[in-house]
Amino acid sequence: MEYAIEMEHIVQKFGEKEVLRGIDLKVTRGEIFGLLGPSGAGKTTLIKILTGQLEQTGGNALLLGRNTRKIQEVHQRLGMMMDQFGLYERLSCYDNLKLFAKIYGAEEKRIKMALEKTGLFEDRKCMAAKLSKGMRSRLSLARAFLSEPEVLFLDEPTTGLDPATAAEIHKLIREEQRRGATVFLTTHNMEEAYKLCDHVALLNEGNIVEYGEPEEVCRRYNHQKKLQIRLYDGELVELPNDRRAAEILKDYLEKEKLETIHSTEPSLETVFMELTGRRFV
Amino acid sequence: MMTNIAAVFWKQIKDTLKNKETLIQFVMFPLMAVIMEKAIKVDGLPSGYFANMFSAMYVGMAPLVSVAAVIAEEKEKNTLRVLMMSGVKPGEYLLGVGCYIWLACMVGALVLGMAGNYQGGSLAVFLGIMAVGILTSLLIGAAIGTLSRNQMMATSLMVPVMLIFAFLPMLAGFNETIQKVARFAYSQQVGILLGRVGAFRIGFENIFVIAVNMLAALLVFRYAYKKCGLA
Image (tube, rainbow over all chains, first blue to last red; front, side, top):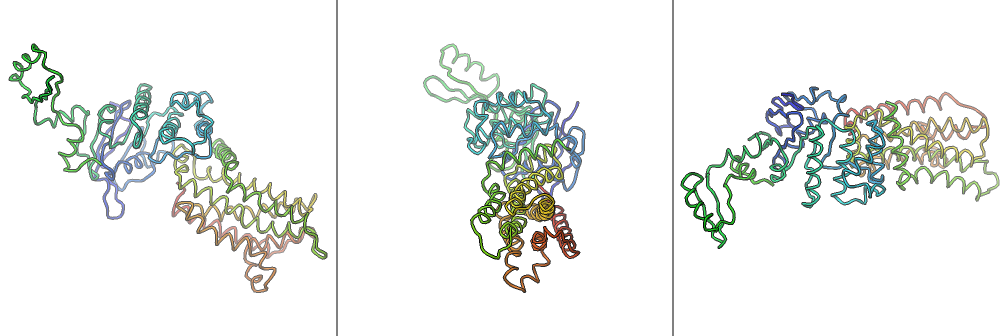
């Protein structure tokens, strides 16, 4: 298996405070990987280490096969959307992209494509300072897409955005994955991670407390193994998720009483709470 | 390398045209010199008096304030980090921004020279002196910008430094003690040299003080860069 990112016992200390405590993770090429954790868990610190913005106190990290302590040569193969967008506010959307197109050596048509893809073409002459938060987010993504990066780092890409804009951004991220990019995103939005990611890791106080496919992680903590049933008359019924439920379900179906049926595996948030005793905020 | 420097240079042109705070630094003194030279005629006042006085102030203020403000703003708004993460090296960024501000200031210097009625060889000497002074100021400004985490910190560091270098040449004319101290400032030496442009007289003290100031600025910048980095 080919990995885009490999981390081996990454430790990060700021003074006496240990922010990351021995992170071991691998991200396969072409996947969308989600690093989940509450604020202050160490997500941004890990992204900074992986992108060479911060040198870790201990351990090794490889990005596209290069040690992250010396990755200047691969910077142009990365796309990045950080929590602060870093846009030139007095420049137009077009000029913001043109600057980076010059740096990447990207052709003019890529600017147009990035603007169209992110729905900003009509607003290309608008100054970045005048954009809404959602539009800034999209401009920042457009910039990250310009170089057709092999790895995309997205730090909380949809925080503070309305659901419609967040959905548009999810669509763009999936398109990048289809193109072949590896996506490393951090979020504290569990639903986003569940829908979008191929693998997730739950980070708490500098430790990875769980790792796997989102569905698999949730199934692993399905201790109740029950079915939740809502009938048309409004009654809620819980049944054991085994053969004992079969007769009852058959009866409901025959009498056309069954409105919805759900299994009771926990959400990623419930898993996190079970593992850490903390809420996800 | 040249591509990145050119990209940063292009960005700076676009940005400055919409940035009144920076733009005014380049325009204010040349404009004031033109107006004063045209409007005020006093018997006994040497030709180009106002142009020379404003030129020395311009050297101590415009490049220093502009470059410090640009770097500090980029640090505060995270744009510098994004540039670095895109493969622009610190040296390329500094050259792109520095070349732009130096050239913009040189255009201002040309206007000041013309306001002072310098022509031909005199104008070339005038511009040469200004070029060296502007370069020294650029280094000091770059050090301040690099040391600052944000624009507020840059302002609180740059204002006293700028006041000293920009106003010493003027204050030195009023007080002998200040004049003695001011000799050690590059802006004062620039002011002295500008007063002798026609005579083409450059003394050892002028060159030595400017060189020492430039070296000190370079060392402060190196310290700031090592301590704080750019992004």
